[in-house]
Length: 489
Image (cartoon, rainbow, N blue to C red; front, side, top):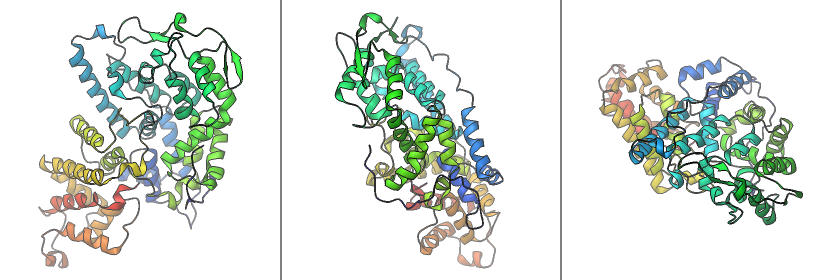
């Protein structure tokens, strides 16, 4: 089991959150839900959420994600190498196109995009190890299909995707040359946690049961099960003996170790959606009840997600602004919250910059994936985060989108002429917490005022129709990107 951290500040329970006088349903709480459950939302979307009850809002988000149609397969999605015209050129182009489409799905699909991103970092593969567009699509498809589905079914299907068989050497696991990589990671990273409920013997015996997925009809075609390379004979896994194969492993794993799988998965979901800190109280009062819900529902994920997202714990004020934004969060949340324009070319740039900041799409650092939170921040990545924003905002400002900046400030401030008010509403809208001191707001206001003489503000002569207003908003947004609070969600 993972080491527990020091005490959490959030002592609220899984009791459903019902707004009250002391604990009202506010714009910031709805915005919090969209930042965690998706990648942020526009002011109008948040206002619409505010008109619903917390229960109904979460039902809308979860049910909408669960019933969202699958992303259509590209025409090349099941190509063999022989189906390509010019393989090297087309394969690389299709990979680029799928990366951009994946980014677009993350930014637009709310909870399903968010969970697909989560599962891609749970059932990890690294694109460089197989670098084949059809296998990339097929891997994504499994993660998307099961994102809010049945976790046992998910585990069963992901292990025999070509991307996973190649990445963790399942295709090399035969009765002649056993390879234990996938068996080890199946337990250590995907279902149980390191050293939790399995032995080295279980790994060895499991690897034998996983043999046989070694061949294709032609390069790039699916890998199929070949009985001639399967270890045909009894294996003992978690105390159960028989001539087990791939499906048997999954059945025995969930039958014999389901009580360990459930808290492991619920803990990872909690750390991703609520807080990286899990102490003994959180473990007992939040993780274990969620795990029991998962078990009671035969490992269906939707009941667990609804229980967590509807809870007082999720909506507690102390849950706001305690997670460090990933590079994806940093830019995708801003794009959704500002409604600033982007296109496929900009998405390609977003993904490139995210990679330079440590989050390369389909390229996690290793089989354990990104560890998130504090790992996102270093001296180099922090300045890189600022530079990313300045580059994006500068591109927009230099490409005829100046009015976008003006309209953003006008909509949030109700066309105010007060620079302090405009600054504060923009700062507060883009941050999960208020700035630490009043002087922090003063500094932001001075940046927004720019070189406009103070008497124009004092006499009410300045307004957002001024020619300089879009540039002033640009300067403020560039500054906000450097504020410590902006790095949190």
